[in-house]
Length: 425
Ligand SMILES: *Cc1c(COP(=O)(O)O)cnc(C)c1O
Image 1 (cartoon, rainbow, N blue to C red):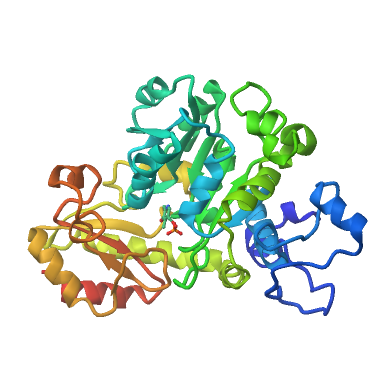
Image 2: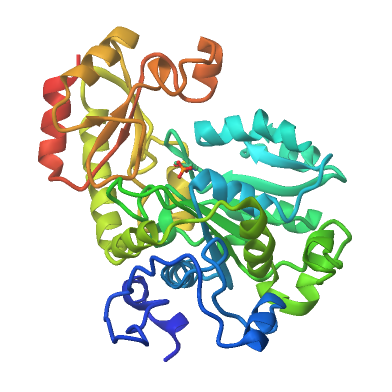
């Protein structure tokens, strides 16, 4: 049986890993080395010429990180994956081979706050731009695409919570336009959704969140489906034409479905240097071994807490899609059939002041700017992550002054509910 045919729980433990060839060590060793000794000069030349695949220098490749890349590629159903230093680095690494000055992407308005800042502000410094569109308005998505659009970007389950993207509908638009769909699958994880099955070309993750699962690592990954035909148009010359940054190599012609992955390592990591470290990759490999078990508990706890919150008098709205009242409830069975994640917002009738006081009262919940930890986490976006926006902008991005964002952990649901019950005002 090939590894691709094994079940998710088997792959999350075994994919990409084997007993260490040098020592027999059963767990993937942390290869804490910068460089790798060449067998001889011919070997060194073959590695640099990409005629032979192997390890040269850890900015490019490292055996611990290679095991993690292989594991994530197999969990997402991709042809290859490149790990990098953070989720935000993964977004740049995914776009870098596609973009040139003057190019744009069409992106959902419902994105992680830091992603919105990267797309609307920092992109300008590269000569790139992002057109933000409501992804429920498919006509608006189509209308936003122009000759300089090189990708469509969205999140499976969008931060701060409660929104599920209709990936199939968006993938159909990308396909018609001949451009790749990039999906940030951080909040769903490959256990709840495989965007490639819904037509995504590239999948990015912040490994910082559920994949590692305990708030110990900053990391990211870009997974390539291997299915996009980069040579079908002249839009992606860095992949489909001789690339001057690699002495005229044509990546698509040379590597076929592995073109994007090779480009990510040979040019992306080589020149941008957003490399993951082997210690971080080790923690993430350990985390992924229990991903399915943790996500089942995250989802079950989120459902229990959301149902409790929906009945509580102090709360005016709960945005969890697992509740039948959610406008996105009917997308669960198609996009995230094992559950709608564990991230959602509640609105307090007492407004801004009640939110700030309630957060201070919480004992089990940690007040942090993270999500996807084994611990339950809370933040009041209007006084923290979204405090620089106007009240109108806060409301539009789902971070109104009366909103608290909850990232439900894997403690006992009754203890999570008890903490909210004693804390809320
Ligand atoms: C955290 C997060 C990011 C950014 O990841 P970092 O690892 O913090 O750089 C991007 N997208 C989503 C959905 C996130 O939750």
